[in-house]
Amino acid sequence: MKTFTALLIDDEEPGRKNLSILLDKYCPEITVIGEAGNAGEAKQKILSLSPEILFLDINMPEVDGFDLLDSFTQKNFAVIFVTAHAEYGIKALRAGVTDYILKPIVIKELQQAVKKTVEHLQQKLTASSPALFPDRIQLSHTNGFAILELKGIIRLEADDNYTRVFTADGKTYCVSKPLKQFEESLPEDIFFRLHRSYIINLYHVKEYLKEDGGLVVMEDGAKIIIPRSRYTDFMDALKKLSIQL
Image (cartoon, rainbow, N blue to C red; front, side, top):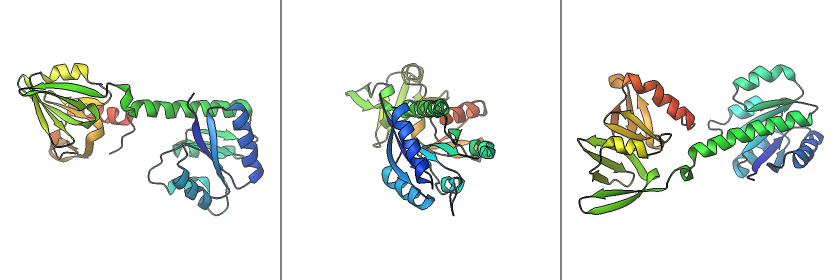
């Protein structure tokens, strides 16, 4: 069973110790890798230890839990608030925390919060894992064939009954295979059919521009128009992979 690392942040040491004991006894999927008694210490340990989950108290001296979270522009961790103050529940959810439990801690509520958070993290891992789909693809061309890593494919462009495949190393392969066949064989959660002439790798999208009705800029500099009919599906596909533009 995969375990997830956790940092316990609370200005009261007895509270941290109690939570650590409960996690060790009742939540085997959690490995506590550190503790912090204030926001400054917490930030240092988040940056140095890279925990996957924060068990975070809200009311702390000088800098509270909300302000600590706001100090991170990119949050590569899930958050479970652990607090004695029920009135912060709605604000906590709006702050994007995974769950919220009250002190004194009820074991069942702790287990439910951990279960929910672990499932959330596992879904993110599944969505971003290259092991979800075959690592490589064979492309036949006029001089033989090439074997490419799927994660290195930036985009595919239709050229009549051929397809041009553009890769991250700057190469282009012309393959005697229509784009439709690639659409049927490539993992649809990673490769998105933008319109009839293009399939793009969502992980190689660099930015979105509103000009000309909407453009996607790929990492190789290509600008591709997004049809209005595909815009919502495109944004939804990015959200499923936790990609923000």
